[in-house]
Length: 326
Image 1 (cartoon, rainbow, N blue to C red):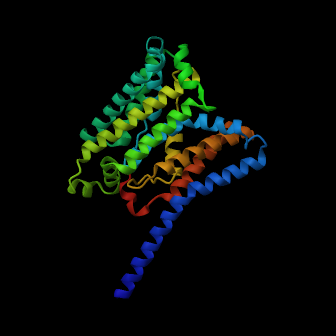
Image 2: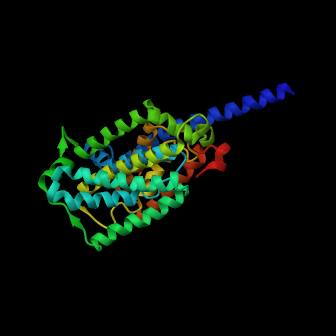
Image 3: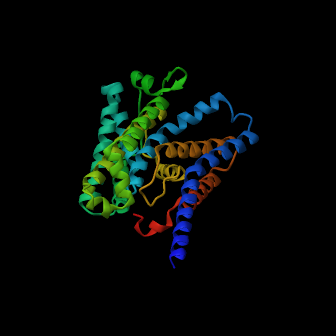
């Protein structure tokens, strides 16, 4: 009997080890496969200019996906990120004539307020994160529509555009800002008590609570951090388009969640890596760039992105925790 139990434990440990290996190497293999495939079908894909275009296109997605990583690892979800990005972009565009470069402050500030509202309703109001952020997604987008009346708010401040759309050493400033934000987030995630608490809550909320972690407070700060990073993403998006529109970042939620999950972070929470999210962002950006370059139908592109997301979830989800997905 003991031999049977030991064999069962060994089989379970082996299965979990295999899952961890798949989760770790899946994004790397997919990224290499995409690069190889697009390089063989287009001569323009492996060029310096196209590489910079991919980086510039992925800057906003990277910042928002890093924000979502904290939320998903904690065992929650945020469907309002696209609307927060749009509202923050509107704040930056509307105040850029008076504040110039410092329009980053109201943009991030609006993001923090949105995250604070989400966090309070979720952690202290005890409303599921899916429902909370689904509601605030509509509310924040409604505020953008109410202010703009459907008309774009253009950005004309020269200093603003020079700083956020210019280049340093040949690299777009938006990319450099996104890299700095990602590095800071990685330090917080990997080397602080807060980061360990986020992983502990996602791994087992009841155990985390019994171990002395202030679960509600950590959840609140997770959403505040997510909002702040989405505010920064909104600033970068408004600078890139030189305007804030009612449709800005619409549907960004799909790309953000896809990037995080494809990067190896399961929706069950408790496990995740910032570097995996970076790989996931590159996969989504390269997938979009390569499909555009090879002339894939835009409607088919959405279908392919959805398929990639489903495959990634299928390969990386921890089915032993399926009952606590939030």
